[in-house]
Image 1 (tube, protein in one colour):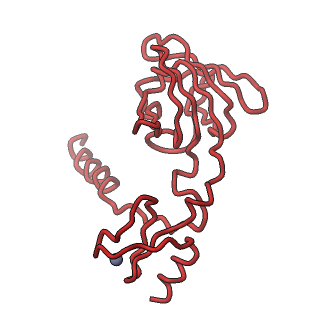
Image 2 (cartoon, protein in one colour; image 1 turned 60 degrees about the horizontal axis):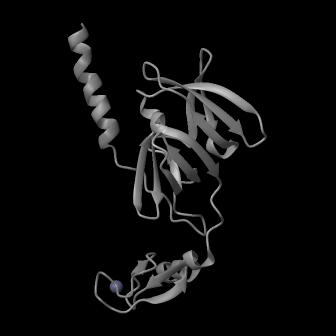
Image 3 (cartoon, helix red, strand yellow; image 1 turned 135 degrees about the vertical axis):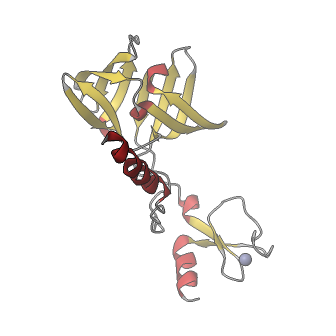
Length: 191
Ligand SMILES: [Zn+2]
C-alpha cells in the first residue's frame, strides 16, 4: 500500500517543480525586486556586519517563520524593526523580535526548516545566510526607487533593456537610447 502511494507522490512533487513559472507582469514603476524584500543590516555570529538590500527568505514569503509556544507563526518583515538570535541548542534557537510598534516577542526557530535560509544583495555581491548564523538583524523598508532606475534603454529595432550599463543592444549591437519606462512600453505596444 505504502509503495503504491510513493510513485504518485513523487510525480506530483516533480510536477510542482517542473511546472512553468508564472510570468510576472512587467512593472510600471514598481521595483523589480521581490516585493517583500527589505534593506537589512546583519551581524553574524562571528561579528561580521553586512549591509544588504533585497534581504528576505530564500524560499517563500516575506515573513519570519517561527514557533510561538505551540503555534507556527509568520511575522511580516515590514512589521519587524530588528531581531536577535540566541544560542542554538539541538537545532533550535530563541529569537527576540522587536516589532516596529515597539512590542517585544520571544519566539523560537528551528534551524533545520527550509524557512530559515535567507539571501540578500551586498555591495560586493550576493549574500546568503542561515537564520541560526545571524546574531542580530535590523530591517528597514527599502527607499523608494530612484527616478534613474525608472528609465529603460531602447534600440532602433525596439528591443528594450532595463540594465543601466547597457549602451548597445545585445541582439544587434545597435546603440541604445535612454527613454522612460512609459515611453518604452508605448514603443512596445505600437510595434
Ligand atoms: Zn536591438
